[in-house]
Amino acid sequence: MNEYKLKGDFILKTTDKNDPNLDKCLGLDKLTANLFYVCDKCKKIYLFRSNAAKCCTINYICERCGFDGSKTNPPTELINNKYCINCIDIVRKENAVKIKYDGQPLFYDDNYYLNEDDLLENLLNKMYTYDLMDLDPFFWGCKEDKWEGIDLYSCLEKELSEHDEDIYNSIVDLDALEKFLADWNKKQKIVSYYPDYKTIIDISEYIHQYLIN
Ligand SMILES: [Zn+2]
Ligand SMILES: [Zn+2]
Image 1 (cartoon, rainbow, N blue to C red):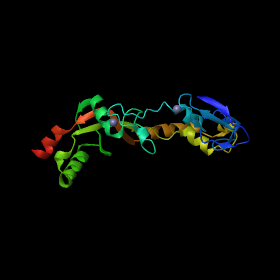
Image 2 (image 1 turned 60 degrees about the vertical axis):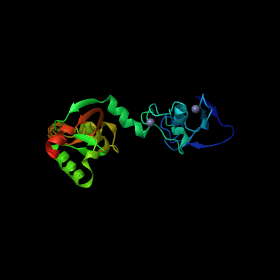
Image 3 (image 1 turned 30 degrees about the vertical axis):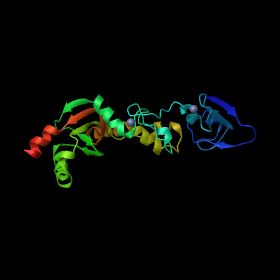
Image 4 (image 1 turned 135 degrees about the vertical axis):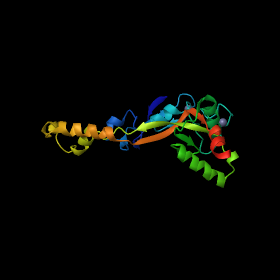
């Protein structure tokens, strides 16, 4: 990628955090130097450095089915720069570790099933609304993201942003607050889940045991 100066007095704005000229401006989305960027390979011209840098590194051909995302308007970017939307789950399934169902949180079709009751209720609902045989019995595993609690120092930073930097020394009994918050944080039980595409859980045995027999 090459950098060029525009002739004349063009004034460009940037929304690019990585723009090397950002420090010469007042901040993001402020005026920037009159530069533009050209992709070495295809010679396309970009106003933003990050777009020029990623030009020609984007793979538009699905590695599994050969779908060409550059032919759609707008171009379709591939998931992980490799697979189209139709192939990604098939590839993930091939590569995932298969685990037996043991009541753990599951992810399927945009829904989470956090425990057995949750799963059973939803499977029964599906039975009434669809043909259960339609159901793919391979569900994704989940990863946990536990809330660590309130971060005292980022709160204080916000609260005291209008004051002098050495104001921290003037806070009375910060130790007590720190200790209280550390204990309080430990009691918190907030957990969020997100799909773990590296594990796949076969629930077909579970369906047979609880729903079909
Ligand atoms: Zn290019
Ligand atoms: Zn594909």
